Length: 327
Ligand code: NAI
Image (tube, rainbow, N blue to C red):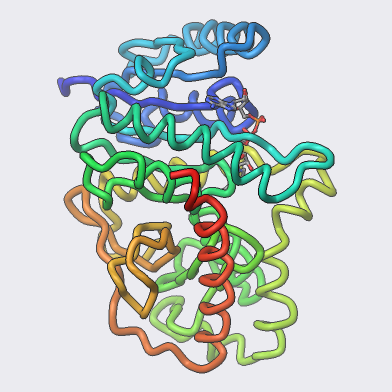
């Protein structure tokens, strides 16, 4: 049987953590033959550490055959020791009266500390996924704080936007979501993201031709996907958690185990592809094979798409600028 791999999860006692850990432990992320050791990080606060103890009791009570160990941590320097996968979920939410700059600064503080800890103690091949918002900028901060690790190991979660877009397209066309290929989401995990179905196909047929309604694209589809997070908060009184955890599982599974040629969306550091400045943590269409992602290149960007890409890029550059002095 395989040797266990180490999976670190931060914010482990939060609502995404509760929807995520049991699925990782059951083998849904890394395969039904891959034992895992969970290295769980929460803030030192007594309430959070107690909540984490409760989650661990429940993990024990599942008696998962693949769960080879569970650790509780309050310090990233121990939580990230030798970790092969790191899911950075915990972040500072926006509190009442908090300015955007305060939010960026609070998260910059968390993600510089965690980036440095990964740099110091994680496996040199660690795959890092940042879920905590602002996810792209937090991933950028962690990457910049870990100069001894390959920059390509740091990614941000755009998969929830990708899955939301796929689901809207399936509903509009009346086709199965599983049959959708070649969907792309560009940019920031925020309402400015650009979900792009110009190249998408279902059963080999063009989704754009099938829908044939540019007004729907611009006035219904893009705003629906972009504001889906807010719609869920309005309906549920809490932010999306199970769907976010599901997207995190999808992202890590595809990165580790491959996509068989299927396009998925990942937030990854640009190397200049599609005119995005180097190092910007940008949502791109990718395929994955042998534990590596590869950007789908050579797609034509028309005027409307360029406009959308510029908008989400400018937002990311502003966020990046807002934390520059803290790095
Ligand atoms: P939550 O508030 O229920 O849980 C967050 C947990 O993180 C809390 O238990 C908190 O104690 C912990 N935490 C805070 N700072 C930490 C630190 N420095 N180290 C370790 N743990 C820390 O929040 P929820 O719903 O689980 O969401 C987590 C994050 O994910 C939020 O930032 C949210 O905005 C983001 N999110 C991102 C999505 C995406 O698509 N990228 C989708 C949905 C949520």
